Length: 266
Image 1: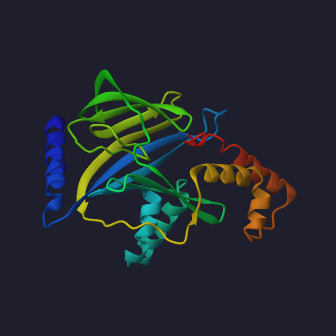
Image 2 (image 1 turned 30 degrees about the vertical axis):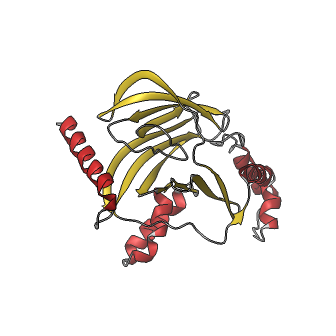
């Protein structure tokens, strides 16, 4: 029964891919579970967040469920539903957005550090994949294995040729099928697909008025600002009446955020 359902979903998905040029446009909405060890020295410092990948023709957007809810707040009429959505947004630890542009061969990353919003661009073909012989079934999808290194980590990916979309979570792309699961070899970062469906076409737009930097500059300034969070908050013009012990506690919490997805700018 599960295999029949999976095949039906794939059929609908393929129909939407073929139908991109038709009058009725569709987008593909894919949900991923993201588990992440924040502190490299503490194996218990793991959190989980729901992420979404939206594919619309030659571009895609990857963002957390919380941020996506924030984008839709203006469309919510019920005050009660609005309050519930705001609570989910505040719980979201992932505030970044990742745009992939197939026709422009680029990836755009937007992220926030303290108060400022930053944006940087990379080439789309970031990954040198090594296709491996191993296969296994994940969530009803027959998958093939691939391996690549990026940002100071080595990843093992499982992709499905049955879904001929060269896409995946975060910045990952370039395989001959959708990435169903990807995990670094230390098992500190894991993305796994949980659902996919067709939705009405979404024409996503990049946010404006962001500070443009290079990737290396972004990683450096984030490290510097997190390294002295008190000074960074003061510099941003934010006034908080913390005691010395509270400031030390806050700095300690930021010191534990040392295991970023990308460990270097290579």
